Length: 115
Length: 114
Image 1 (cartoon, rainbow over the protein chains, first blue to last red):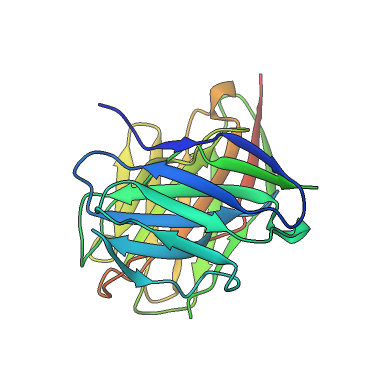
Image 2: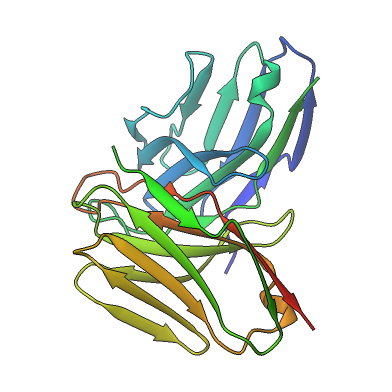
């Protein structure tokens, strides 16, 4: 079946612009995670959704970052007034379970470059 | 919070040799330990995972061992092939919590020379 998809795959933004990154999880997956991966580093947790509820946003680096999943399926990560330090790959992952969360399956990521 | 250390950062082996990557974690409540393989420009792919009620798990040429007392776990790849070349990440998670977000190591770049 279809895996996790993300769009756009690449985004170039001028500093100060707003961007929106989309994640389509595997159909029926209840849990959805966003991670940020800087060049040469491991992914770092940003936020977690269980269905439409955002249960953890402790990893969001500033109040310029906002995520939503209004219908419990597609999620959008929005970054306002982008800064150069926001340049990274943004990965989305979904998991079929909640509570004792199981395997996480990643999308291909969106590479954001802020100039 | 949880902290995961991974070693080595780079590893070069000859085709057919074994490769071992080691990780340590700090939070004794962590109970789920997946390993991901990431090729350049591609998504992280789950290759094997282990839960804290198990000491070892094997899947063909790949095995993972877990030592809960010492809080470390290792990935073993036998009979390495050039297509094993990639960056490998270990991770830890507390599945007793409601979130289960993964804490990743910094990665090991494995190069398998033909």
